[in-house]
Amino acid sequence: MNQPVMFKGLKAQYIWYLGGGLVALLVGFAILYICGVNMFICLGIVFITGGILFKRVYRMSGKYGEHGLMKKIGNRQIPDWIKNNSRKVFIR
Image (cartoon, rainbow, N blue to C red; front, side, top):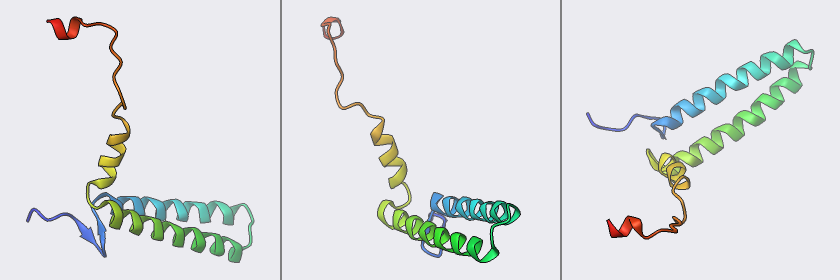
């Protein structure tokens, strides 16, 4: 109870990122194969990009943790400064 969802070291939303990436790789393989690209070239592309996907998702999971990536994205939306040309805000 009250434990974060974890699967093989992946925490929370990173499980979904990895699943979505794997589905995209499957669709990419199917498109390449239907277009007539050699099957071994398709497999090579999928294995290389899949390895990169796994490495990046596991790195993000370890670096940011369960909520850290959302905090980082939210922190980008905070303005560096607020410009105010009037003193009316402080007088009221």
